[in-house]
Image (cartoon, rainbow, N blue to C red):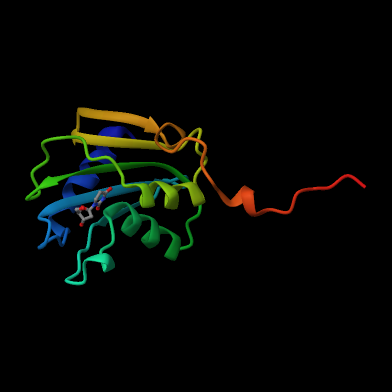
Length: 142
Ligand code: THU
């Protein structure tokens, strides 16, 4: 799937964002290695800390459907749903990506439009990360 199609999926998902408190609307489109796409939006809550970001919405939808392998994610958003700048993922969402994605190859695409975007690897946005490998028992030589 090309970048433009994935960006279009994120932009099209943006109206579903529920952000009555911050009015900062965000949408994400997550591309799985099998070619399927899961979109997600931020869903705010009157008890603010119960809010979930667009990126995690997309990841949790995909994982709930049994997906575990991911290629890239597009993120877009802005105040009142107007995309004026690149919208970078928060630290918690970067850590959720780290659980399922290879830091060196997973692409995070911050889009202002279908042909105006910036692309990073997860490793670039989350260097020296803590991940599933850290919790594996070391193989000790006997
Ligand atoms: N937000 C996201 O959905 N993704 C991000 O990466 C940044 C922040 C949302 C959370 C909250 O609903 C609003 O943007 C303002 O923080």
